[in-house]
Image (cartoon, rainbow, N blue to C red; front, side, top):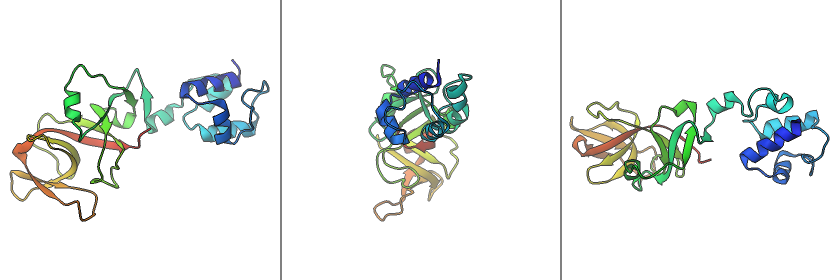
Length: 212
């Protein structure tokens, strides 16, 4: 397999069109389809435009298509390994979806940093901006024992009256309450007191990434 054949295989894997890629990467039109090989300038442009591509594999055929170092730093869609992603909003009833064994995830997200999560889902709302933005996806780890919850962490909480919220957890005004703290400092967002007995289900938010 030639370098160009390997690159075309990569484009198919990523679902990218040759012409569109040529325009976005600054390659001359039709350069991918030409029988002649890539020159050094073209390889450099490809490397810049495709940070997850293993350039050694592209040039020599040795190793794997994707760079391992990038796999560890950037989330990747996978169907064989990683953490389930459900295309639902947490505030829209995510916990109900998670507990329904008939619902399958759309795919897996392989992101070493958060591969100890139980699942990924969507975020709606602006109360945690700029820390977590509307439209982000979040990695959640369910906490079964809620007798002790470390303060200062961000949690996704489902209450006994079916309220769902994502907030940082602070000390409450009394021993049996917590304070829900938004990151957004706009006047419409304020702290709220939450009785500990009202927590039905709680997930630690391990991290958030932009939708990809």
